[in-house]
Length: 502
Ligand code: ADP
Image 1 (cartoon, rainbow, N blue to C red):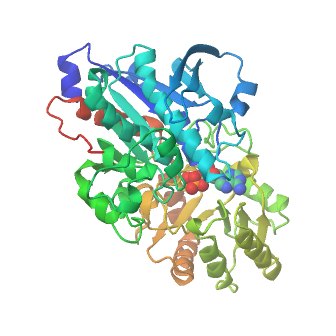
Image 2 (image 1 turned 180 degrees about the horizontal axis):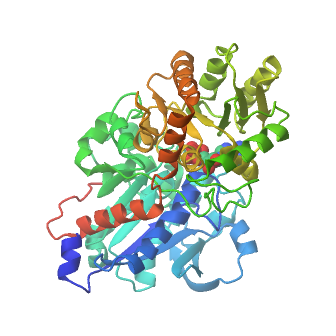
Image 3 (image 1 turned 135 degrees about the vertical axis):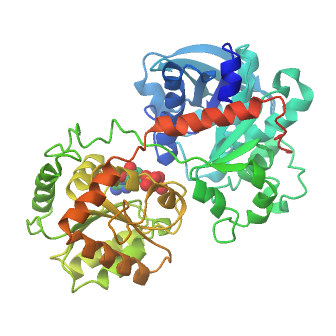
């Protein structure tokens, strides 16, 4: 690609990046982080890299009520109809700007019907996101914009990659458009979408290799159509081809193996910087790790734990969800009752896991403290103060917490899965590495690996080396952005024969 670009200085790529949520406008989960940061990082690459194609990336998200009520600099630029069996459904396009990048919001009755980004009613969500996905596909025509790449994310917008393949045969404007589907989480496929697909006249997928149950499900339909599928880490890209992680789609995904790749997500390194963090007691750096311990003492004080630099302080910051292996951590910590450590568990979610955390706190009151809440500022104080992050995920497409922890000199003990494998280097006997990985998702493997970490923790100089190595890793979005631009460019090569099938 770069060669291509160098040969042709005017080489331009127009990219429409569509998602169900994006920071700073609206964020519910990790997808919001990515959809806020990645397009912006790609937008900013222009200034940094003169021999890259000139990428114009525009972001589109639904115009939720919460965005409408807080956004002032926004104006309506277009209105058009999306076709349905009940007649036309009006879509309105609003435009704003994020640090020089164009952002569109799409409104319409299916979007405004409920105030939630993701509601409890699957059918209503399906209608909202299918309407939104189809409306996005109108944008190149409405805006008279020569689109090259349609970049969609997860099940919510996957259907537009599918519908694009239908449009290609009907319209010259769409023939050359290539699609990229970023897969953040395979298990969420868009259950309950059948009626909405019929409503918006979207035929079932014809791909014979797709299991019949996937022919009317947005994510499998998108996976069968996208020109390129990007998992959010290289290891997750491999794992989804196996029975354990492939959610009954692994055989089908194997048929698309050459169109599947993995690109590790980045981290907002400005928001997560121990050198400037305004939420922590004392800023610190790899050169000044001593200052980190003031954060540790402050955190111990805050949680009424014994104030001591020596006692290893562990944290878990996570959705309380079986995916995250919170139960593995709880059982594993119980097995270490005789070992000296302290742990603070922060999270909300599954009531039974929340309860199990509270129970553990009661059983081990000197050691364990629990905060059942979502508190971003507290999470900053915890990353800054703690020695070890616990992340025993059953599966982890990418994971952010381990990257944040490493930046704050908080060493991860994590399960060797997905993005954890791609971002953590297991510490060897010479103390080289950035964390401690274990393979099997069970409390014994977890506690054994935690003991390994705790024994290295006692070797102060080796431990500092591990902390410093983690702190200087480059997890910036610019890295991922360059890889995505390479991918876009490879799809635009005239020889590119990566067209999905629908
Ligand atoms: P996922 O997106 O699967 O939940 P990630 O590790 O990718 O997991 O990202 C989780 C993010 O949410 C991290 O930034 C983590 O610090 C934050 N987080 C999770 N739970 C909480 C909580 N209870 N309070 C504050 N921040 C939290």
